Image (cartoon, rainbow, N blue to C red; front, side, top):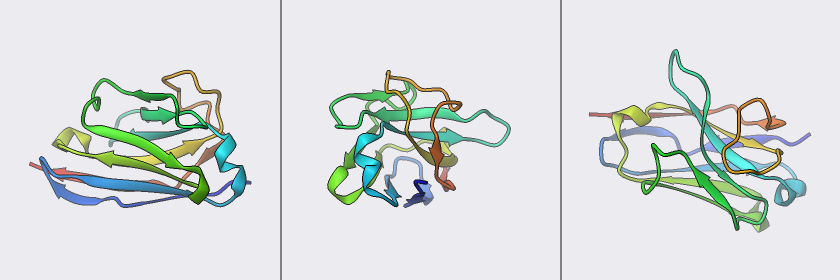
Length: 124
């Protein structure tokens, strides 16, 4: 059973930056495709960005293209989400997810493992 732990969320002003981290509990991390999702109150959990096991392929939702960067360090069993030029509409709980077949965008039904989520709040 893989455990995922997110960190790095917080309160930031519009235009600011945050870096989220997702640490995995075991070494099989490097074989998993991974993704960041977010869920705002009253809304569905949607994919923000996804990355293949090697990091060679990456997907971004249109709403974050050019502002967010997903990356991973398999030696450290950690995935990251660098978020720049943050907007109030980026406010949500951000979740990391792992173990699905990478194909670009991914539905929240498919990842087998989830973190507990970290709150990101962007003030205007």
